[in-house]
Length: 185
Image (cartoon, rainbow, N blue to C red):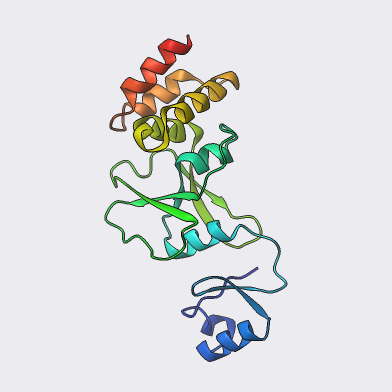
């Protein structure tokens, strides 16, 4: 399945007006402002697709990453997406919560994964990075979410040494993680 935007319409043999005509005729489906998919395309996560198109460095983070790794039962109200600090936050879709992360630590624990049903890829933070971020941003997302994710990760055989090593490179992460590990021991 190929996503089409006004900027890429020519590559797909469409003019801008042809793109809008195809959308009006039902050949393309508008999934977000300026993003279209073929009407017969396989099912895909539209928010992931929009985030990957809007920002090439988009990375699923916080509650959304914890949910992806099955470390929480919490259903995120919006897709949490990190972008490097200083990048412009895209306007529009309220179902995507954009977060600015420090450029110096942005790549830590980050992998690229394909978006099912598309030719696109999006960044995803590892379980360890997601737990560390949950602890360092616990005032924003809640301490219980971080603690419960840590408990589930440990239950599955997570290695605290790996988590501590990562937490030492992130601001405000090491101390609350050590405190939680002591309380759980």
